[in-house]
Length: 217
Image 1: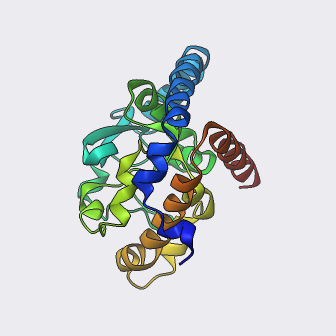
Image 2: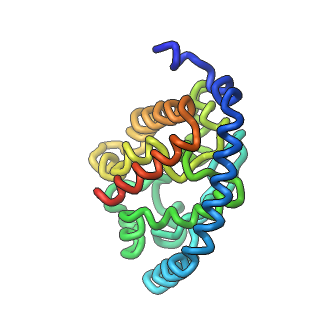
């Protein structure tokens, strides 16, 4: 482990309070503007979801945010109603619970647009460690729990590196075990990498990289 890796994340964030404050201002301004501009698109997505599979427009799952505080994340619903009661909390391959419209939303990442509300409300940021469900957060080591020192994000290094996570899990004999023992630790290490570099400029780079990854498919 390098000297940089040994640095305590709390100390790094303390030295970057100004950058974090600017990052929050950017989140408020951009999410507010995006909600105002994109509301027709959000309405069309909502209508398409209901027409394809009657039920709630949003899927609101409990996640763990900054400081270990739980909140409900907004996502456009991509699965059948009560999907979390009909299988794992992770999605594997071509999960039969995914609706036709849901498959399109997941492929294009449009289901994540609903999280603009979480960003505007201060529960999330555009960029930051993806928020996990309480069950998996309970498995974090003290070192890994440092990701809870910042607001979770819509995208991060791990979101890009594991954008095809469902396909990886589909080839596993025990998908949940693979997620917990291999994928989750790797994603958390990428989260740590981000926390050591956190800044508004790094956020812009990651947002652009995410857009490029979505376009590439």
